[in-house]
Image (cartoon, rainbow, N blue to C red; front, top):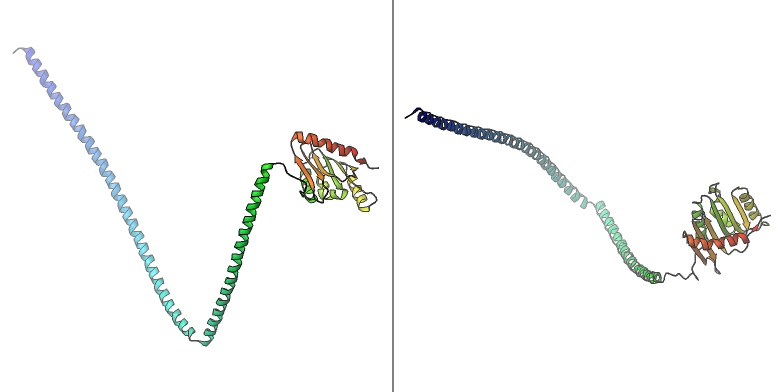
Length: 293
């Protein structure tokens, strides 16, 4: 056997040996990882056991607390049972007493009286239920009528009643929003007292037309007060046919007085085109109104 053959064999043996060592090293590492995993698992188990022990201790404390609470409740129950026994004896004693018998009879009479009142109230309640059903029927009828009327859209104002007080209230509401200019018309100068003109901003110019009788002391005094305000111009309008307010060119209320009292046709709008046409009637009235001497 030559030297080359010996060297080759030795190298192969060395490789085999090295391979064995590598296998041993790999197995060793695997076992170490296994030991580490087992150690971690044991630590987790220890933590779980500790948690379970703590939980058991807490439960034992809760059980102890509940046991004490139950014992206290049992003592209270016994005390109540004793108290009930004493009360029963007292009731027996009271029932044998003549005074208490009369008191019981009095209570029975009160109970009977209450029962009579209850019977009366029950009857009133039944009557109220009947009235309520009748009212609901009337409301349903009114709703039906309203629904049928709403289909028409055009309102017949021939006999429609809108009282003067409601119109003046709306004018006062609109007047509260005035910023620059307003034109107002009412039937009589005394109607202006309901508009609270003194509360209007002093920067608002107010043109007012209404019926005024200077020969009447009340009219004369009110006219003098109004003319003392720099932002009010007032004219005499004798026709007594309209209520109106035109505010800042933004909203306009125009009411035409009907033949019957409170039969007022009221138009209220913020629409520009509506206002444009109605404003011609506003100006017509203002031009017809006479300046005061």
